[in-house]
Length: 110
Length: 117
Image (cartoon, rainbow over all chains, first blue to last red; front, side, top):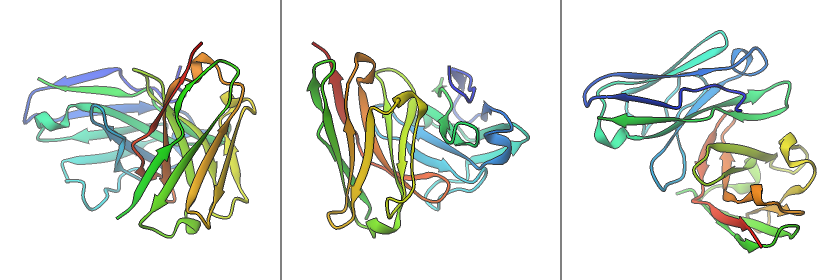
Protein backbone atom coordinates (compact mmCIF):
# COMPACT_ATOMS: atom_id res chain seq x y z
CA UNK A 1 0.00 0.00 0.00
CA UNK A 2 1.64 3.21 -1.20
CA UNK A 3 1.49 6.44 0.79
CA UNK A 4 0.50 8.24 -2.40
CA UNK A 5 -2.53 6.90 -4.27
CA UNK A 6 -2.62 6.71 -8.06
CA UNK A 7 -5.11 4.94 -10.31
CA UNK A 8 -3.58 1.65 -11.50
CA UNK A 9 -4.37 2.39 -15.11
CA UNK A 10 -5.78 4.97 -17.49
CA UNK A 11 -6.38 4.83 -21.21
CA UNK A 12 -7.19 7.15 -24.06
CA UNK A 13 -7.00 7.34 -27.82
CA UNK A 14 -4.17 8.98 -29.76
CA UNK A 15 -4.55 12.75 -29.85
CA UNK A 16 -6.72 12.82 -26.76
CA UNK A 17 -5.97 14.28 -23.33
CA UNK A 18 -5.53 12.28 -20.16
CA UNK A 19 -4.97 13.13 -16.52
CA UNK A 20 -3.36 11.03 -13.81
CA UNK A 21 -4.12 11.82 -10.19
CA UNK A 22 -1.90 11.44 -7.15
CA UNK A 23 -3.55 11.71 -3.75
CA UNK A 24 -1.67 12.18 -0.50
CA UNK A 25 -1.91 14.14 2.72
CA UNK A 26 -0.72 17.23 4.55
CA UNK A 27 2.52 15.47 5.51
CA UNK A 28 3.54 14.96 1.91
CA UNK A 29 1.88 16.50 -1.15
CA UNK A 30 0.27 19.52 0.52
CA UNK A 31 3.52 20.85 1.97
CA UNK A 32 6.24 19.50 -0.31
CA UNK A 33 7.06 19.64 -3.98
CA UNK A 34 5.72 16.90 -6.24
CA UNK A 35 7.60 15.38 -9.16
CA UNK A 36 6.39 13.03 -11.88
CA UNK A 37 8.32 10.30 -13.69
CA UNK A 38 7.74 8.37 -16.86
CA UNK A 39 9.04 4.82 -17.15
CA UNK A 40 8.94 3.33 -20.61
CA UNK A 41 9.03 -0.48 -20.78
CA UNK A 42 12.44 -1.85 -19.86
CA UNK A 43 14.00 1.54 -19.13
CA UNK A 44 14.87 3.69 -16.14
CA UNK A 45 12.42 6.37 -14.97
CA UNK A 46 12.75 9.86 -16.40
CA UNK A 47 11.58 13.09 -14.79
CA UNK A 48 8.69 14.81 -16.56
CA UNK A 49 7.61 17.39 -13.98
CA UNK A 50 9.37 18.77 -10.91
CA UNK A 51 8.43 21.25 -8.21
CA UNK A 52 4.74 20.62 -8.89
CA UNK A 53 4.54 22.14 -12.36
CA UNK A 54 7.98 22.77 -13.89
CA UNK A 55 9.23 20.90 -16.94
CA UNK A 56 12.84 20.08 -17.76
CA UNK A 57 13.78 21.81 -21.01
CA UNK A 58 13.72 18.60 -23.02
CA UNK A 59 10.17 17.64 -21.98
CA UNK A 60 7.48 18.83 -24.45
CA UNK A 61 4.75 21.13 -23.23
CA UNK A 62 2.21 18.38 -23.85
CA UNK A 63 3.07 17.34 -20.31
CA UNK A 64 1.89 19.51 -17.41
CA UNK A 65 1.62 19.28 -13.65
CA UNK A 66 -0.64 20.88 -11.10
CA UNK A 67 -1.35 20.61 -7.40
CA UNK A 68 -4.26 21.54 -5.17
CA UNK A 69 -4.18 20.78 -1.48
CA UNK A 70 -3.31 17.14 -0.90
CA UNK A 71 -3.62 16.07 -4.55
CA UNK A 72 -1.48 16.48 -7.63
CA UNK A 73 -2.29 15.85 -11.26
CA UNK A 74 -0.25 15.04 -14.35
CA UNK A 75 -1.81 16.06 -17.62
CA UNK A 76 -0.84 14.81 -21.06
CA UNK A 77 -2.34 16.27 -24.21
CA UNK A 78 -2.03 15.14 -27.82
CA UNK A 79 -1.46 11.53 -26.77
CA UNK A 80 1.01 9.56 -28.85
CA UNK A 81 1.72 5.84 -28.99
CA UNK A 82 5.13 6.55 -27.49
CA UNK A 83 3.49 7.90 -24.33
CA UNK A 84 2.39 4.39 -23.38
CA UNK A 85 4.32 3.88 -20.15
CA UNK A 86 4.10 3.78 -16.38
CA UNK A 87 3.86 7.11 -14.58
CA UNK A 88 4.81 7.76 -10.97
CA UNK A 89 4.36 10.71 -8.64
CA UNK A 90 6.80 11.35 -5.81
CA UNK A 91 7.33 13.77 -2.97
CA UNK A 92 8.94 14.14 0.43
CA UNK A 93 6.99 12.98 3.46
CA UNK A 94 7.64 15.12 6.52
CA UNK A 95 6.33 12.48 8.94
CA UNK A 96 8.13 9.47 7.47
CA UNK A 97 11.20 11.61 6.75
CA UNK A 98 11.72 10.08 3.37
CA UNK A 99 10.67 10.17 -0.25
CA UNK A 100 7.41 8.47 -1.10
CA UNK A 101 6.23 7.29 -4.50
CA UNK A 102 2.76 6.64 -5.77
CA UNK A 103 1.98 3.09 -6.79
CA UNK A 104 2.25 3.99 -10.45
CA UNK A 105 -0.28 4.37 -13.26
CA UNK A 106 -0.06 2.49 -16.53
CA UNK A 107 -1.13 4.62 -19.47
CA UNK A 108 -2.50 2.72 -22.43
CA UNK A 109 -2.83 4.59 -25.72
CA UNK A 110 -5.58 2.74 -27.51
CA UNK B 1 26.68 14.26 -20.30
CA UNK B 2 25.57 12.80 -17.00
CA UNK B 3 26.10 9.07 -16.62
CA UNK B 4 25.22 6.82 -13.70
CA UNK B 5 26.21 3.17 -13.96
CA UNK B 6 25.24 0.69 -11.28
CA UNK B 7 27.05 -2.58 -10.67
CA UNK B 8 27.38 -5.30 -8.06
CA UNK B 9 24.04 -7.01 -8.44
CA UNK B 10 23.64 -10.74 -8.75
CA UNK B 11 22.25 -13.87 -7.16
CA UNK B 12 22.65 -14.14 -3.39
CA UNK B 13 21.23 -16.55 -0.83
CA UNK B 14 18.78 -15.41 1.84
CA UNK B 15 20.70 -13.95 4.76
CA UNK B 16 23.60 -13.01 2.55
CA UNK B 17 25.18 -9.64 1.77
CA UNK B 18 25.87 -7.63 -1.34
CA UNK B 19 27.48 -4.27 -2.05
CA UNK B 20 26.14 -2.22 -4.91
CA UNK B 21 28.13 0.53 -6.59
CA UNK B 22 27.12 3.47 -8.75
CA UNK B 23 29.80 5.13 -10.87
CA UNK B 24 29.04 8.74 -11.71
CA UNK B 25 30.45 10.88 -14.51
CA UNK B 26 29.66 14.05 -16.41
CA UNK B 27 29.06 16.26 -13.37
CA UNK B 28 30.74 17.40 -10.17
CA UNK B 29 29.76 14.42 -8.07
CA UNK B 30 30.64 15.88 -4.66
CA UNK B 31 28.15 18.73 -5.08
CA UNK B 32 25.12 16.50 -5.53
CA UNK B 33 23.11 14.42 -3.10
CA UNK B 34 22.38 10.91 -4.28
CA UNK B 35 19.72 8.25 -3.73
CA UNK B 36 19.03 4.56 -4.12
CA UNK B 37 15.64 3.48 -5.44
CA UNK B 38 14.50 -0.06 -6.17
CA UNK B 39 11.81 -1.75 -8.21
CA UNK B 40 10.68 -5.29 -7.50
CA UNK B 41 9.68 -7.32 -10.57
CA UNK B 42 6.39 -6.03 -11.94
CA UNK B 43 6.03 -3.56 -9.06
CA UNK B 44 6.40 0.16 -8.49
CA UNK B 45 9.29 2.34 -7.39
CA UNK B 46 10.46 2.31 -3.78
CA UNK B 47 12.86 4.92 -2.43
CA UNK B 48 15.51 3.42 -0.16
CA UNK B 49 18.08 5.96 0.93
CA UNK B 50 19.55 9.45 0.50
CA UNK B 51 23.03 10.80 1.14
CA UNK B 52 24.13 14.42 0.93
CA UNK B 53 27.18 15.51 -1.04
CA UNK B 54 29.47 15.52 1.96
CA UNK B 55 27.83 12.48 3.59
CA UNK B 56 26.73 14.57 6.58
CA UNK B 57 23.03 13.85 6.05
CA UNK B 58 21.68 10.36 5.45
CA UNK B 59 18.10 9.11 5.38
CA UNK B 60 16.69 5.61 5.05
CA UNK B 61 13.26 4.20 4.36
CA UNK B 62 11.77 2.69 7.50
CA UNK B 63 11.23 -0.61 5.66
CA UNK B 64 14.97 -1.29 5.56
CA UNK B 65 15.15 -1.64 9.35
CA UNK B 66 18.87 -0.98 9.54
CA UNK B 67 19.92 -3.70 7.10
CA UNK B 68 21.22 -1.35 4.39
CA UNK B 69 23.96 1.28 4.58
CA UNK B 70 24.51 4.05 2.04
CA UNK B 71 27.92 5.64 1.54
CA UNK B 72 29.93 7.51 -1.07
CA UNK B 73 33.52 8.19 -2.08
CA UNK B 74 33.74 11.59 -3.72
CA UNK B 75 37.33 11.00 -4.79
CA UNK B 76 36.17 8.00 -6.80
CA UNK B 77 32.87 9.58 -7.94
CA UNK B 78 31.08 6.57 -6.55
CA UNK B 79 27.99 5.80 -4.51
CA UNK B 80 27.52 2.56 -2.60
CA UNK B 81 24.79 0.51 -0.96
CA UNK B 82 25.82 -2.20 1.48
CA UNK B 83 22.97 -4.67 1.85
CA UNK B 84 22.98 -7.22 4.67
CA UNK B 85 20.58 -9.91 5.88
CA UNK B 86 19.01 -10.07 2.44
CA UNK B 87 15.52 -11.51 2.05
CA UNK B 88 13.53 -12.78 -0.91
CA UNK B 89 11.52 -9.55 -0.88
CA UNK B 90 14.72 -7.58 -1.55
CA UNK B 91 14.78 -9.05 -5.06
CA UNK B 92 14.58 -6.01 -7.31
CA UNK B 93 16.25 -3.76 -9.84
CA UNK B 94 18.29 -1.22 -7.88
CA UNK B 95 18.73 2.28 -9.33
CA UNK B 96 20.96 5.10 -8.22
CA UNK B 97 19.50 8.55 -8.86
CA UNK B 98 20.93 12.04 -8.63
CA UNK B 99 19.12 14.49 -6.41
CA UNK B 100 18.41 17.74 -8.26
CA UNK B 101 17.17 19.72 -5.26
CA UNK B 102 13.59 18.48 -5.14
CA UNK B 103 13.53 15.64 -7.62
CA UNK B 104 15.51 12.78 -9.13
CA UNK B 105 17.07 14.40 -12.15
CA UNK B 106 19.11 11.50 -13.52
CA UNK B 107 18.86 7.74 -13.08
CA UNK B 108 21.14 4.86 -13.87
CA UNK B 109 19.91 1.80 -15.75
CA UNK B 110 19.86 -0.31 -12.61
CA UNK B 111 21.51 -3.50 -11.35
CA UNK B 112 19.46 -6.60 -10.64
CA UNK B 113 19.60 -8.26 -7.24
CA UNK B 114 18.06 -11.70 -6.87
CA UNK B 115 17.76 -13.24 -3.42
CA UNK B 116 17.07 -16.94 -3.68
CA UNK B 117 18.36 -20.26 -2.44
